[in-house]
Length: 230
Image (cartoon, rainbow, N blue to C red):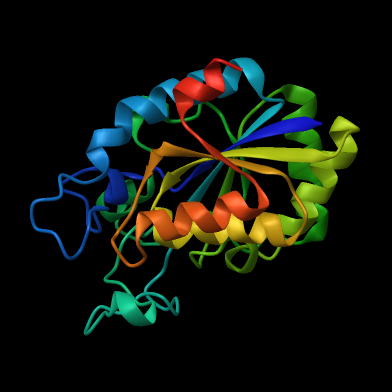
């Protein structure tokens, strides 16, 4: 099978302690948060560059009018959050929060824009595969399959370009929001998924053990060290 390295939302606003929505356990003031996995993410991406057929980064690419943005009374329990990863902002400084962290920022990615259509998805897939370039998928919702209407067309086109069925190795944040929606969505569509438990971090909305157990029912949950060892 073709192996796709899938890096979920490793963006400044999520990964930097000074970011606008730093990923840490919302119920634990002592939780150091996602900065602890930066080195693991870096090593995982290095492994992906050697072993995977394609690297795909996803990222929230928000505007103030997105359903999941509430600048007045955000409530994570109901799926709304304060402004973050404002890739569609007119403020260049605000947009920087949507960038992938420098440690793993892709060079010259092919961008699947947040409002891409079927034809754009095919073009992005062909370009990425033929030129061996990473892809950045912009999304307006935490779920990549609903946050970018062209995601499914893109994956189908990647499979056709590579000539083999797709499987995924998934890392990133937040484990109990964007990552689980990606993993759950891939598994629901029949894709084999390997999730790296030590290359994710959560907000505490769902216990880590519950999330990992659900992933393991349909796929594989492992660590970077175990993945490297074969």
